Amino acid sequence: MEWDDLRVFLAVARTGTLGAAARAIGQTQPTMGRRIRALETALGHMLFQRTREGFILTSEGEAVLAHAERMEEEALGLRRELAGSETAIEGLLRLSCSDWFGVTMLAPILVEFAAARPRVVVELLTDPRLYSLPRREADLVFRIRPFDEPEVVARRLMRIPYGAYAKTGTPHPTGDGAGSSLLLMDTAFGGMPDVAWITGKLPQAHILSRSNSREVQARLCALGMGIAILPRPLGDATAGIEPIDLGEAPPSRDTWLGYHRDMRRNARLRALLDLVVERLAD
Image: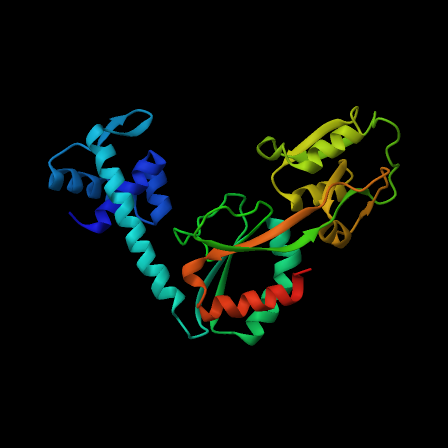
């Protein structure tokens, strides 16, 4: 039994298909299948039921899963400890944040950081999923939800004001918003405060579009598709739109940053953190 085979096992158990597991760990689907068969042969048990819907753990597979996850945590802990003790300001840093925050807030800082630390490669991930710090899917995460993981070092970075925006020169909504169109977050983010705020302010406005991307909402707003609630740094920087007055401002949001406690002594992470805090912290 080899650790690489257990990594494949974990990927298949978590995703349910060979194809998704292959994409998750960067291997080919035939290789994944061979590794699973080799592991089952080594253990002398079937670990998955093969169904039309995908791979389902057997009772033996469930037993292996608990042990494999503990082995994974030990392996990842070793990697984090070694990475956290690095003193050279070079190597890879993986960051995760929302699309608009990466473009509007972090991009100028990353340019400055690259000029001062050219041997550090910064990888910026801007899709909406929450990346795991314990699994080292990211080294530094920026998000609007506070961190509650005990192994994560976190701090509030800044408070972001929000505003209502419309295409420059278009009539502003009046009354209950009848005849107006709204550009909102998608249903997965429907509980966000700005969604409740604008639908409360303009209850008769028509929801014309939803998106999980603030950048997309800002662009659609500039094209005249409707009213969008945007972070002020993004809205004020977007050509072709202007803030509109609905009697009060939308709720503002805090931005938090977090990193794994094992990375506290990592020199390249500390260098970037110091610059981010200096430029953005309020």
